[in-house]
Length: 297
Image (tube, rainbow, N blue to C red; front, side, top):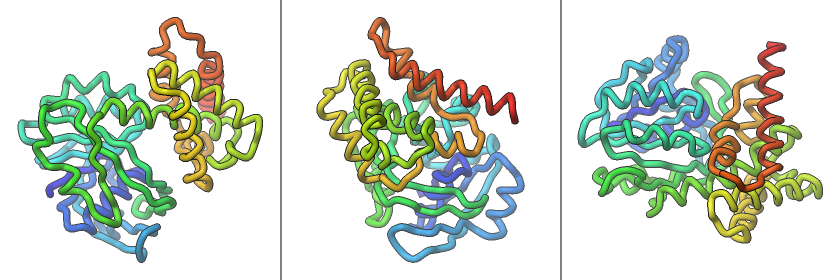
């Protein structure tokens, strides 16, 4: 399959590397020419969690200068989505598809401007970028995908992308898929970022566990998901990814802008008159850390 991956971060490198290894024709679109040159010279090196480490060659391009692809996979952070949408809305044609792999749900507001089939996905893998060409596969999982916009899965997407060592799993309800992922992000990400702990620490610290419980209760109420199921799911993810650092914690540690607006900010926007004091607290706290980073950086 001819695939264009937009975004050269940890997720973009991981997805590009595994898809290229499994015989897809992959082009990775970077923002920086120096990253493009490094990948052209050295390929992508993956320290794999499921097999021997490997190095694989991919084609490269500089975003926004995209070429014709069967499928685009958008692997950027939320804060780059607006620029990506402006390009895709002008250049996509019938028969192509776009798969979005973002945290949060604020990007769904842009989907109407995409003239082709839109897929959404949630990523259960762990990945840590070491350099412009190297990524560590820190946790094995799967990528769940569903249609958001379009009547049919014209590309037969999950079947064409799936491989036993890098599975893609089809889900019937795109909105539910994103809501369940958002519940996890709204609980785990801000707590781990604020207290600078790994995911599993939430389960082993009674005060963090209580905070997680309250955040889950607020988010599940806003998203109209059953709380008991949501709380069990959050705890399962904490346990399964106990040694992982959340993406928001990595952003805070590296002085980068977080995705708090697309996660807790989305919950706040959807809450109407529902009281959500814990969500407001973690949102304002993360924004305060970002403000201090700007001031000191």
